[in-house]
Image (cartoon, rainbow, N blue to C red; front, side, top):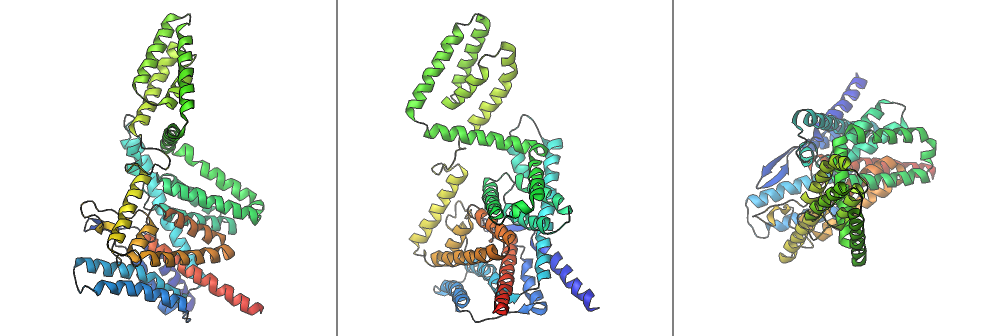
Length: 485
């Protein structure tokens, strides 16, 4: 009977974890507010079923005191309104995860939460795959831009959650013999691939690169050569199976390379290339087949009118050079489509911070406005008192688009430094004990550079998971050290 209730407890943790990872939000006061905070129930569940671990630690006491103190600064004006109520709710959601530092949960509880994260990620991964093929076979129009597919399928909201689950799946692959996790790995990578989010893909690339480096250093990659090869081949399946997404990335990459290169190339190279193009045109005019030469020349003039930039001209010249009239007819539609895609989105450049229409440029713009708001209101050190960035501009409310900017705005520079210190402590402990937790946490932190992560309800659930994993690993490692002494 005791074993049955014991197993029932872990099933409850698993089910609650699955629903806690589901993102759900409402629009309140022109801002999107996460409302799924089921993970609060874990506090009461753990209180009655896990080990309550309270040790006097002045560092944690000071942290809690600071975060509570900056909230009570809101009462200086003695003004109670809807903004104060929003600050109160934000304060509760922000401070609640810190109370999970007082629990040492069972290993099996952590495994249940890991499984919950994986299941939630796989559920949304399957939805992503379904949406992709539903759009492809029912809604896709070859004449429309691939951007429509991006907005129908993609989304960065769950990107960081999928990244966290990725390394938990890899842990199962490398530490167990269950081949079913290879299938889950494919679904997870498909979900990440179809986010259409550069920030998510960059976070994946950097975190996985570090993961490989550590695996090489620990010689794990040599002990698991076959498994590394399999997951590499599985990841490659995304390119052909989601070929429209691959095409979208191809076009995006070409735009970024050509547009960025045209910004930084030296003037003398431009002059040299223009002279080279003139020489090619003269040679073409002297060709024996006058009709073909005339056609080519007219086609070149038509391309020039598109004003695509010198690098595009080179691509055009390379493509049409030495081609027959029939070949040109076949290539014309392809070239027109390519040039149209290039011309339709000139904002695609690497690190184009000055262009407010670009992704990174818009972020720099709102981050600047956010910082100016704090400076003008003399709140750089203590922040806004937990209210979100939507108060910065009532005419055009926006979110922080960065976990760290959001923390800075809500809790000030002191609060941001405290949180960065906590993140660093987590990374150091995970690095020493569990490389999969380290990579999972690192991937979320990297995503947080350009997206809110732990601020989201599903991110809050992830943060609680990392907290109890940190306490568990730290507690047991210290226990082993005492035994050795």
